[in-house]
Figure 1: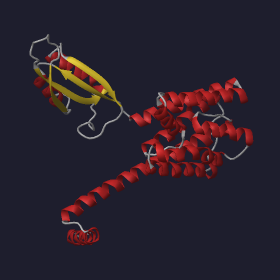
Figure 2 (figure 1 turned 180 degrees about the horizontal axis):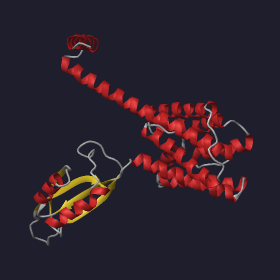
Figure 3 (figure 1 turned 30 degrees about the vertical axis):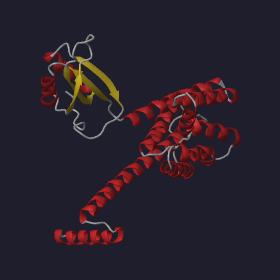
Figure 4 (figure 1 turned 30 degrees about the horizontal axis):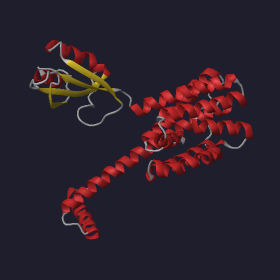
Length: 322
């Protein structure tokens, strides 16, 4: 489109929006348009994650678990058990059993999350019912590992998109708020009960394969949610903070933040000395190189490292492998 036409159309849109919302300046509409654009791009990205997650979970269920009477943990596991016992369609059970948890999500988390989750689970049920998927293998070990992998990948991607396709996490959040149990504790107890029921109804071997499927799924979920590459936050306290800062910027190509603090090791009556604290974020692949650079400058520097699940912005996109 001609730039002049773009300008005219843009100004016309701004004028109409201004008239509608009664704002005071065109700058206000620039801000509104930017926010709308950001919200729309996030919605598209999150929807893509949810759809991809649904397709992955559907492939795991129909290509591996369902044809071979395997089960998993969570609400999906309960649905699979009931489907095996009653021959009711899994698609119906996925929606019916998740409904109480999704209703709980309205008060436990938020309305937007609950609505997205309802849509995601309905789409999963439709996919399981209508999308034809060939049976991939009849090897029990491969079924447990790869069935769990694709199901976990689907759940993880859905969470990345701001929804769930298994209501167990919602129940875990609800119970953790009412008791001293953590979310992890609740999920573990919930799944142990499912595996005990599976062992009683079917046999020990089925329950053991179910545990293997659950482990494969849970590890995949952790991997997807935590990000492809794990980051490490590093706090460095040294008298040579400026030299360390320059090494991080020039040798590693990373950004950092300087905190002003005080050295706490002092006896009564002694004045606390000021110190600069360097904080940076990098990948585990760069950790050895950072430690080498720190040791070159000050081998007595106090260094604290902790894992970061995910990060965005700054200079973290650059991930050198050397």
